[in-house]
Image 1 (cartoon, rainbow, N blue to C red):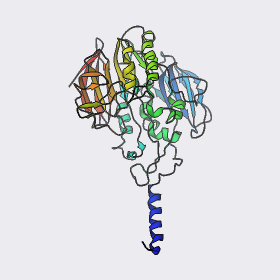
Image 2: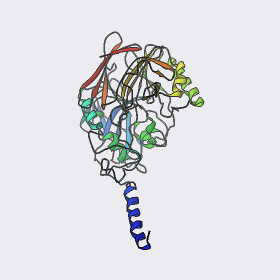
Image 3: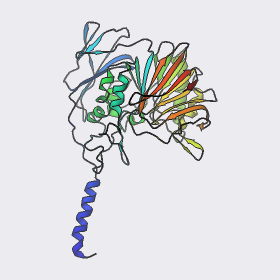
Amino acid sequence: MTRSALPAVSALLSLIAFLTLPQASYAQASYAKDYHWLQRSAQGLELRAITASASCPSVEIDGTAMPLKERATPGKGFGVLSCFILIDDTAKHILLAGQEIAPPKARPDTILLIGDTGCRIHFPLVQACNDAQDWPFARIANAAAQFKPDLIVHVGDFYYREQACPLADRGCKGSVYGDNWATWEIDFFAPAQNLLTQAPWIMVRGNHEECQRGGQGWSRFLDPMARASQTECLSLHEPYRIDLGDLSLIVMDSSTASEWRMNPIQKEIYQKQFASLEALAPEGPIWITMHRPIWAAAAQLLGKAVGGNATLAAAAPSLPARTQMILSGHIHTFQILDFEQDWPIQLITGHSGDQLHRTAPDHPSGLTLQGAKVRSGLSQSDNFGFALLRRQDKGKWQLTNYDASVQSLTSCQLAKKSFACR
């Protein structure tokens, strides 16, 4: 190479380096909206709100005005106020900022299931967040709202924009990123705004809401536990029970459960938590919702299934015999499994926005997952969507998986620890 060519080569290398650098974070224009929703937490039923105002709003409950209390004050990256108030389950009319919020039902008959809703920006996996086809969460939330569910369960992973969009990628150009209000708003609250007030929510913590990832936003806005400072991230929360009429739904935190290798310390923790559910739900059937599934078929390699959680599976013998179903996300597909052994149904609804796991086997029957042999199973990995559970008689439920266009993809009848789909 001649000396005269060096400046040109240097300039070319500098240009390449510049084009492959991540975009700098910047303050995205706010939607200038406040958000509010009902949430079933460990303390009971809460009305929660996020506001850019200097003080918390007031709510009118059955004709009586009450001020919300501060939950988390503004801080670095979070220029909004988080507020809450406990509400009695008998409330009939809830009005905040001129908007009616659907009151709770003691016995929810229609339960909406969504999960893994954020838009992934974590190189090398980069989603086209600006494309409603590639990231359809807003479409899904609006479509699901039409069903007027009695209860909404988000099975975790709200926050996905962890890194800047690469300059060369136009699909996510201009996206904010990082654990801050601008990201939480665009990844979850803004696209979900029409769904937020349709029914009480159960917010399940995902691995993307671990303390070192989206822990600040989780603690400020969605964490179901009460403590002295909601700006401090809790590494693991205890199980709590929600009464669904004739069954108990237990909310657990599996966000950090070691997946590929069994962690003996965590195994002991989850054994104790599983064993505690007998006292937490002393009678009737039990469902558990936690983000990481105990059993899952994310892929099939050389005839063997890949998926599930080694730590949770090791602790599973401590599950109460009355446990009929586990509701999870984490695997970006719709999947339902029952087993030859006396294990609960594993239902996965992690297909509501983030990149799909199209490697999941369509028919996992006969596979062995973390020591459990699948008696019957079904995966639908090619469509974003959501699921609805509709209560039937004699303890049975109808489960329907819908795509983003509200087309029914499959319908299953659930009874105790087994199911049949068509």
